[in-house]
Image (cartoon, rainbow, N blue to C red; front, side, top):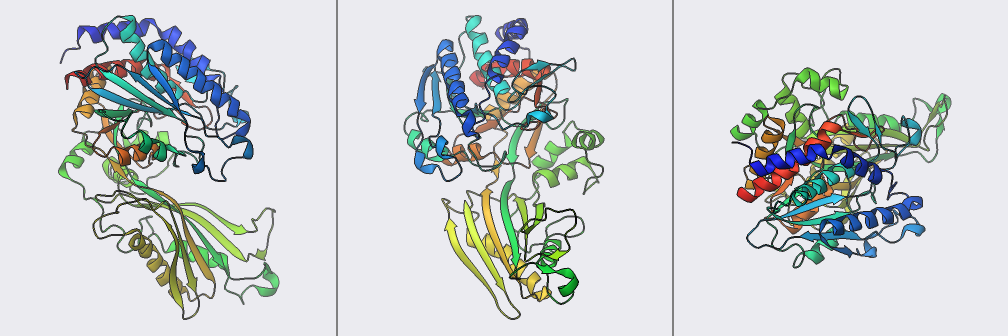
Length: 525
């Protein structure tokens, strides 16, 4: 399919604006709007004002929507009790055109300046073709790609082929890193359901990154995840191992025993029933994996992995990373924490955090928070569900959150029974995110595939991810019939939310062309 003349004109204009595009990214990066920091709150407000003015200059009608402060828990300091407003912007209201909703966030993740080669809030260009600075890859760079694509049509006086709505919120007011929930977003979206969010034909997010550094990707599915804290208690105080070693059942030994019985020697989960409702691999999905333009050696090199757990083929390795249930152990500690070079005491309490990533069929939602206590003694085992916060409909047919937790608790009880320990185990589900999958045959995805092939000269890799995107799940809950496209614009070496975050100049400029082309393809799909 030949590239339309008006899109070719867009490409040429974008190339001519490279210097100006870089300078605007420099201007935006220098705003240190780390919204998880109360000291940086004024910069969060500055960034919002910057984007508001920028959208108005582009022709958008803009509204600042305040969120409900009731959703703020004890996560924020007293000096940061107000959640920044969300930006709502609209460009075009032609009923003959499709309307695209674009969601992004403007704030950035915290930095450790001493681990950067230079000031993280001063954009620096390196000879390796990369632009370094906090927010270059997530999300200031991709956001500017989107805005520059709109600018291009306007500068060339080409009629924008679609209507656009934008929601720009703050994501870093959160409890953990990239897998956590946007405060107040669910309530705000509910309030917009019958107003701003009406007449939306499709939705776009430019989050995520490519798998690898060479070929572009289109993301269509993510696994769900549950986070658990496990603690073993039994002693009233720490004991001297020289006096009591060998005569007490140690909590730390119990913890290690339990963790070792959650997975087999290859790291595969061994919790009975957990994979019962897992979606089976279809011929369509197998075809997608077979068409991936990735090299397993390059994949390991880019990831810094010596040997993959399932080092049989790239497809099998990626299935274990993207779709099969998996277990991750994040830390093991004692209470009080061991903070001296040599500690020979027997700790009274041992703790571990682990997560289970999964994909199940027809999943709508899972509990925000579940507490599960497993009390153990020589002859007594009970499970008490103490609290259940849920805003869900169901997990899968005939499966409740209680059943999901019971699978894990039943398994732990069996393990503890074999252990025959007098210690008490407590398992707490801290948080959870449900899986997500989109119809990659939808016309919005087809538009992205066509645009990507025309820009990069190769078909994009259609990929899944092991991570989840909380904001995406909130939109899916509010707009279940609306297709959501996740279109990463940065390569796999972007160091998102890490030290030395960057976007390649190629991704920055070609990403702008991709969005401009996507606008056109949306209009003809």
